[in-house]
Length: 264
Length: 228
Image (cartoon, rainbow over the protein chains, first blue to last red):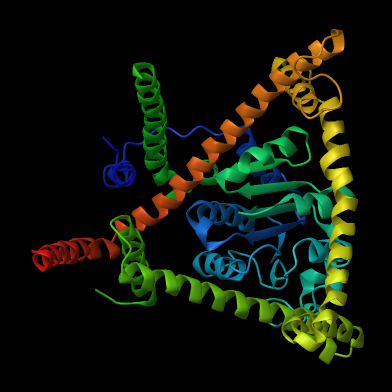
């Protein structure tokens, strides 16, 4: 009898849907990589400048939008300045402006404490140029205001002026290590989609980055850390139940395969 | 009930999600419409955002008097000569710049970020923690797996046998790493599915689900009658 694989889609739909409609409330433990990013932002001295890149594709929105929102909320609550820009994806301005529209600038004033410089295509080359001399790449911000009119940008000449560099990305984050962290020894942390997380652990273990968020789970942990449970924390039940179903399905399918092979 | 842009957006997203999932039954016109919409909107977004980025990065400073920007703008335009058969060879000039600069930058940063800093991190690891000894064993064994000069199955000699056993261990470490990556890929895909299912099961999109089911049942009845 041939098994119709579409039943797996139905089962996954149910294992995701049922916990959404009837939440279980499974506990979420805080991992050291998430704590690392939280502490890095929390411990920034007053007057520090933080780079924040909300730089992911729409397909990673379920994972990266909640974590970016949580990180942004924490950042605007601290007495620091924030420079936002992005180099990886064209979807970035959409999500950055969506977060700004939803949360606002808090007590910060645009131009003095926070700026959004927009998207710069080319990844490796503009990152390197931005790190060396910000003005070689940026002449106006995302809204068309010349950066000479933005007071915060008078304090930012190169990557060396940043105290922390945080990128929320669904893509390749190694260019940031190559062009910013390694040459300028800037503290760096990443929020990544789940498939990118194991690669990032290598850089976390070596001390090249101070924090790393793991997809929806990292977002849920971060929401709990900032005491603002949101969509990600609510999604962890569905994540856990479905992951358990996949494990059972993998073990069951392999057991079935080996038992059939033995019979032959 | 107030109808605003967020609600309309959620309804369109819900309808598009149902249309895409309808592919699980069979390929159909509604699925193809949603697929074409996705491609069209994504392409439009890329063109608009990229144009805005190029305008802000190059054209604004050029108009402001920084004449040097004429060089990258002209080089960028030469790229489009690829589509003119007579002059297509010229596109190789900006392409050479792109490849040269890109390769130079990547190699310069790779040595420090991917090799030296990684080695320093391994050397400076806290070896009072037993898991770091396991990590060290994993690094040595996995690296030995990619040394093909010595050893190999069937070869004799002390080193060859040592190499063979260690590279087998390295293979196991690599498989464990691939397994961890696979687990995370599954986690990522579940998150994507959670995003869509979650939006479908919350208002206002949840009201579209019974409508979609009703349309599906009517379609099945219509199809059965047509075939009988």
